[in-house]
Length: 505
Image (cartoon, rainbow, N blue to C red; front, side, top):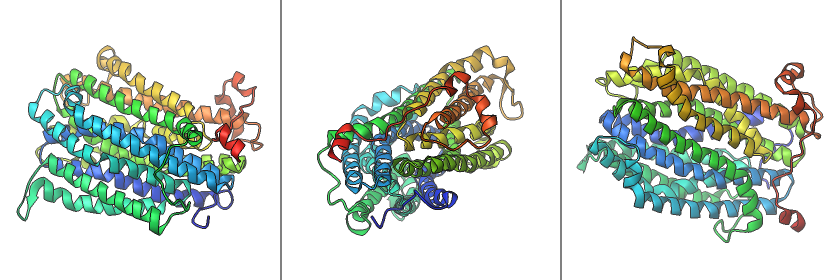
């Protein structure tokens, strides 16, 4: 186990940072695939951005399903390592990879077959936008099995504490994508410009390259778990705990993607078919991912750290790791808040041609509104990692899904009932466009609620758990946030292991 990092002792801050930085860099690399496409396609036109934005919702939906094997691998492997059980760690890796292959192939096939009715559900009135989205989606579907399996292979490395390899491998794919994008989108040296189709081909080629490099590393270069064959029969005794921890995370992310698509439809109806707000939200989501991906990197690092210490029953380190990571993520959320509020024009202008003034103005408003939720979003994501590490993925799923559902009624509430109370933003948008901002205010309010509730929930868990003998930092302050009835009874948490695994051990 010499390639496996022991996180049950040593300096917590440095361990979290060393784990998180490669994960964050990997997240930025993965995000940069889409941002590179958007940046180049923005110079083709906002209609092309709208088309690709619709297709990316489906990619997002499929990636959400991959949280089942990814989170299952990360938590199952890390907890097994904490218990010094290499055999179980190997089994979690093999089963997670096999599950990812099945999910990826089935999802890609479904997307290819049903691309047209799926895109039609967005209710975009421009035929050329719909046609572009369908073609882009079908090309991207070809690469989905490779892209989605890459997610699980990165999770295997994260689970053993080696977050550097996923970054290096994904960085190679990004460089390839950045080189191919302008060539295939605009044409060069006899290669015809293919617009959105060129961006899709560039992405698929890069993802295939990443897949091949991952397979090479796992079999020949750095195979930390010494697994000879990652693809094989799925074993029930490992599938169950993988589904137990990965299922709620995947469900939450799938619901997030689904309700985001529903919200896009609602926004299009509120905007009366005007495609500009949808273009703004498509680009804005990529921009917001800068803070979201950063917080997710620390969340994944915290999940791996917590998993090992949970397996080793080190509750003092679990608690200190949580608050240290929360402080880092909160600071990142604060920086995002300031950038979105004061530099929206400069940020949004990077993704559009100079003549897209109206879109940029809408973008400024979008970032100002979303700036109020960035700290709370960072808190929610970080706390989710702590819950995942101890194998309790249901609380974040409950809070996340409920909050995402509320975005729909919030959109109608702000866009119609409370429209007279919304800021007019007269400097950037027309009076008849204010109703669209109600959707974005609803997103902000839901993020504030989710971050606050999930943080309090984890405080309750730390305070009540019988094995945690350490007082909370500033406990007299935090204890006031916990309802008195919840302070009375202890919480019992079982490790992420199936009864059959216990018997076999």
